[in-house]
Image (tube, rainbow, N blue to C red; front, side):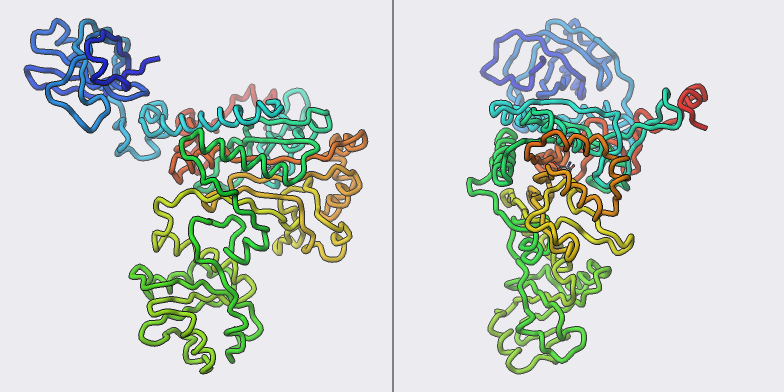
Length: 564
Ligand code: ASP
C-alpha cells in the first residue's frame, strides 16, 4: 500500500516510490510543485525548470493518477499545516497511469459541492479524506466486534437475505419469485428469527454484521438498508448479556480511539428514564433532570392545573441564551402533546403567567427554590415528561451544554411489553413479539399496559445504539403474546409456522441484542448525517443517485417474474 503521508524529515535521503492522485499543481516559474494525495495524506513533488520531466508534469490535470520515484529532501520553505510539510520529493521518474478530466466537484474536505453532486459522483466524494476517515472508523468498529467476540466462543454465521417477512414492525422490501408465480421473498428487517433458530440449532453464541432492510419513510438517521451488529446467546441471563454488551461497546470505543470513562454504564429502568429525563433514550451528558411539582403547585386554583401531573426543569443561573422568546418557542416543540406549558423566572421578583395565581406560601417556597437568575420550566398534563424531555434537549442545544462533553452511556431496562396505538386501536410489542415478558403473564388479560419485559437498550449521548431482549422459549407463552397482538394461532402459523414448530423440539433459554453499526460510526465520526458513514448510501428519498437505483427492468424480466 502507498503511505507517503507518513514520511517525515527523518526519512530525508531515502529513495522512495509514491503513487496517488494529483491534488493540485503550483507553477512558480522556476519551480513546479505537485501535491500528490493517497489515503495517508499529501506529499509534495518538486520539479525545477530544466527537469527532464517538467513539461510532462506541467501537463497533468488534477486527479490524474501517477507514480513517481525520487529522493526525500528537506524543503526550503516549510509548511507547518501538513504533517509532511518539512519535506518534498526530488523526482527521478514519473509514470502517468491515468489522465483525469476536470472533476465535477472540488475534492477536499471543505468541498463546495451539493450533496446531490457528491452522491452522483460518490467515487470522487470518497476521495475526500473526511469520508475516508469515516470508513476507517467503521472498519475499526467491525474489527473490534470480531476481536471482542471471537475469543469468548462466538461464531460468525450468516443468515439469508432472501427470506420471509420478519416481525420488526416495518414495511418489507420484497423480491418477486421467478419460479413460483405470485410468490415473493422478503428481505430481512433483521435476522431475528434466524438467530433464534441458531440457538434452537445448538450454536449457543452467534454474531453477524448483518444487512437489514426496512421500507420506511426515511429520516436523517435512517437508510432503507442499514447494518446491525447482531448477537444471540443461549443460557445467559439478562445481566450476563447487558454486561457483555457493555464490554463490547467499551472495546469498540477504545479501538476507535475514544475510550469511555471507567465508571459502569448507568442503568435506568424505562420508567425511571421517562420520569427523570422525559425520554427512553436519555442524553446523560448533562443534568437538568425533571422534578415533580404537583405537591407544590397542584392546588393553584386553575382548571388546567388542579389534579394534573406537573413536572418541571429548574435551570440554574442567569442565561443570556434563555430569552423569553426562546422560552416561548419551546411551546411549538410540544404542540402535539396536549400539555400546558409555563415558566417562572426569578429576577428581582418572580415573573411568569402563573405568578399572580400563587398563594403566599407557594411564592415563598418558589422563592426559596430559585436563586436570582434561575428559571423554572413547567409542563402540566399526562404527557408532561415527554414534553420536558423534548425541551431538555432544546435546552442542551440552546445553552450549548454538551460541547466537548465526554460520551455518556446508559442501559435502559424493564421496558413495557406492549404499547397501545390509539390510531389503530390495538397493542403492539414495544420491542418485538419474541421478547420474554417479566413477571405474571396473567397481566396480559387484565392490565396489559403494566406487563414489563426483559428488554434492554444501550443508549449513548441520547441515541439508541443497541436493543435486545431475552426471548420467549415456551410455545404457550409465545402463542399468548401473538394472540394479544391480534394474531390468531392460524395467522401465526401461517407467518411463523416453522418457528412455532421449532419450539416443540427443545429450546434453550436465549436472548440477544443488535447494535446499529451506522449509528455507532456516526457517534465516533462526530457526524449527524448517516450518509457520511456509508460508502454508497441512498438519498433521503431512498435513491442511489450514482447507480440510479431503483430503476426500470426489461419487459422480458417482468414477464419472467410474472409482473404486469
Ligand atoms: N432484532 C432486534 C432489532 O432489530 C434486536 C434484537 O432483539 O436482538 O431491533
